[in-house]
Length: 247
Image (cartoon, rainbow, N blue to C red; front, side, top):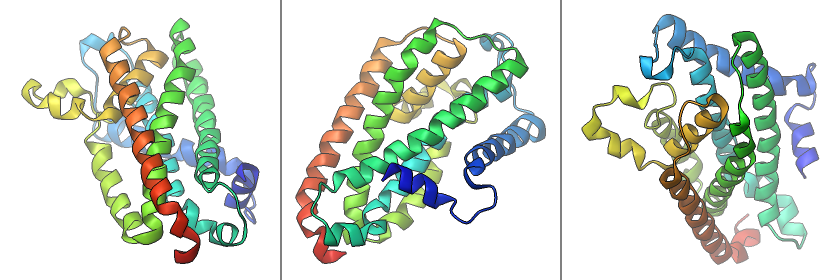
């Protein structure tokens, strides 16, 4: 299912799988141009002279992974309606295949980041050993959300429309294109309760070594991932018996 999904996304296109590199690179370049060169955003001295462009890119990569998986996995059951109606199998694998397909794109993003590190002379540290752990926790969080939304979308097709609006709001409520220290301290709590803030911040710390390991942030991420998976599985299992009839 993963291989089929990756192939079908660019079937008939002249460049084929090369689009896996072109699309994320184009997104990265657009955001970098707008915020680094048009808005001339800069980091404060606490970042030790780190390039804003690199800092921005390291926040965009996990967000693009999250956004792609959630958007595509929400339609996973509808896109595979014929398979679900005619075949007896665990329908969770349909959603899970979209997660792994998105992970393939994520690793492409990571390759692009390391190439940019080379050009910007950014050094890497042993913090990278924590990267697989963060990927697993983030993927668990995403899988729970994907199970919830995909099952709801079978019965409430407005789910997909609501999601596009909500993700745009969520993006700007997460310190991805701006550092959190530009927000007045009394309002930072509202951003810090956002679980994606901790995922983005953790990813940046790993890639750029811009901070120390925060155990409370790590536990917060882990708790939200487990909660997300539990809720997603609960709702999915509750609704799955009617999938074939509704689809």
